[in-house]
Amino acid sequence: MMPGMSGLEVLERVRREHSPGDLPVVMVTALSESEDVVSALELGANDYVTKPIDPDHLSQLVTRGLEQRRRQGAVGDAHCPDCPRLVTESKVMRELAGRLDA
Image 1 (cartoon, rainbow, N blue to C red):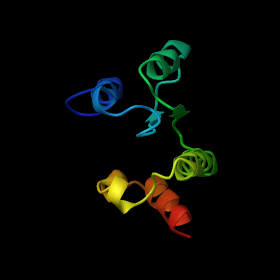
Image 2: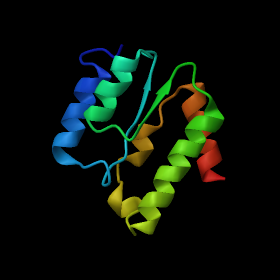
Image 3: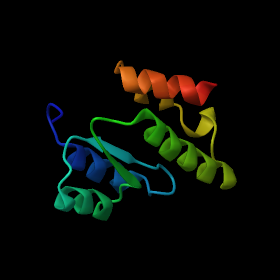
Image 4: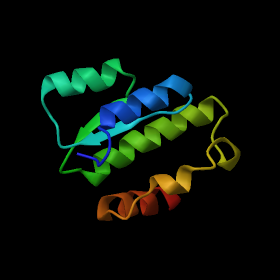
């Protein structure tokens, strides 16, 4: 669990201002019960990945989301000034960031 609020609460707040098409969200969680997955998808998550994370799978999801945004003509620094803050210090996220930069 994240300190302060759950991932579902964060998702609810994000969806108040951003649609799934405007800001895709992939939930990364240790929760794998079907009701958790359904709740996240009903709240507007674009996809759902359980821990331990398979970097190849997560990379494919992110790449697919970026491709969809490119087709919409909306990917770029001007549309995502906070994107660098999305990469945390976790090993998997650093690896994913390296793959996306390549």
